[in-house]
Length: 138
Image 1: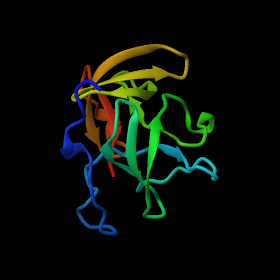
Image 2: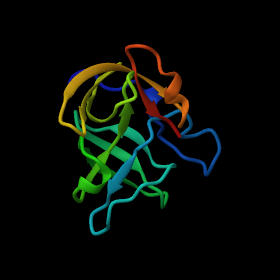
Image 3: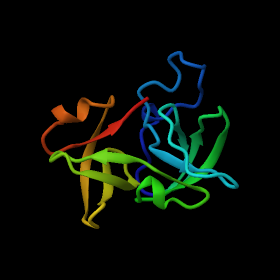
């Protein structure tokens, strides 16, 4: 599995708007089995199950295991989710794989690479750290 994500970047509980889940990696979109692609600002990663398998807290307050895919929301299939990363040059990319402090990414044009990442709120990517990607938090 490689180096797992630090536990402080995920949250094991959600308390309906309190501190649980805050400052954790936000899921851009997910596609539940038997449903359709869903985008919600309160969906986040709870725990890591494998190099690309994660337990995700969904908008309806349930949790399920999803596979991370480096594709845009409209290209997800059932059981998959995506996380968007804004690169230091403001390019939008999707995380292919998380490591402790680095992500492997794929852009919409198909370019791939690795970059250290920081966690920041929506809109804070305009002041991104040089050489680092920015991933939204809830």
